[in-house]
Length: 396
Length: 238
Image 1 (cartoon, rainbow over the protein chains, first blue to last red):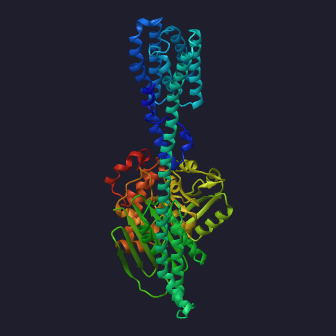
Image 2 (cartoon, chains in turn yellow, orange):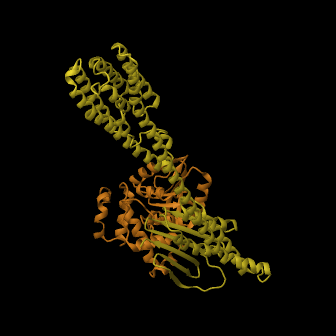
């Protein structure tokens, strides 16, 4: 039986947690590895059983044909097991599981019949093929079941052999020793196959899970770093506006009663509010940012009308800033009332702020067009009646 | 905020009769007060049931209809009145674009958002009485942002005029921005509105709007081929 040892497991069967318990996203890779392992192990188990049956069992059976007590019965048993094993193997390779009870009944029946038909002379020879071969068909039939099931079936197998021994009165110490060797040899290899496969499968799954966890940690760290960079960039933007006026106020260089200083404060507050809104995770960031600006203006006592039509497409934060910044800045200087509108389509978003003209610095004149990059257009106009700030993004 | 002084020769003979249908007496009183500032308008009947109001005032030229009566959207009633040739100006606090466009599809002569105020209200009713379009800013916004795949095709100028009118609510500002006259701005906006007579089910009011648009030279007769498919059934006989 030393040849049996050469048939060491080369792949792993499916053991351990079922795919359902591995369904968390982190474990997707682990599930993939487990699936690949299981597929390989199924092929190995079916191949071992059928090749063993054909390469070792058949020549021995044919070689000793004339010496068997009932060669036809032993041959028929061989064919039945070949057919049964072929059917179970096909089920296994297609990803299913063979039906256990009928297979077990067929295999154990053939087991007993062949022992009876082999005859006393061939009891311990390779021509009594069931002894060495059936263990591998048990592995195929019990695929996906726990190890104790296999142990129980192998025990039944050994019991049939023992009954045959007793029936043939082969109870001499030498026979019993050979029997013990055979039981050990035919049972240990299938059990070793399943056990070794289980260990390899677990190792593969653990390695995959570790790799997935490492990736997840790395992705999380990248995301955190990105968010941190964004926050720092926004803070730098705010600092430019808020820090200066705050410092001047603290030093007493700026007079809080000065309307210009007040406007700078309102503007800084509006920008702060917008930058805070920008970091919120909301489905419609552009409208969210505009709403934040409108809220602030309203809280400062300005009646404001915000009308939004259509759903803006996802826009890069840079584009959103260029769309939102000019109207929010103008909103900080608005008096009496304001009308903030958004018209959005998949290829165009137009934001507009209209406020009444009030006395103050600046002059009326034709619209001044600030086209920063051909993507977002910014038009500013004071016609003596209204102040009109318009930004417009077009898909290029 | 310049409402259109559109009421050129409304009908020539007598004031325009208006019926107001709303389930809130305070709103009826408010609208009545708005309309009272315009001598060419006369409120003939008010109430919360369209059928009753029209029995009281069968000769009303324009029906001001609140789109939501007793908790129910009355688009079907609007369609019925429009099909019967009633000029219905819908006014509603429901200013989501889909509702406004649905009202136009059902044959409303105009859609007025309740917050749009007295000037737009008077101008809209006067325009409707003479089968002329009037597009208040909220409706312009709904038209320019119309996402429906079968929406009418507007020219670039018409879209731009609608957008700027919606944004600024000042035709003078739109005119300056587009470097055209206010009259031309109004023409672009009205032409866009006329194109919407194609959408939805045919209605006598839509045909009347179209006929007057041709008469006024707003659209040329050779341009109406595309409209005829749906409005033909209600084509007014001379």
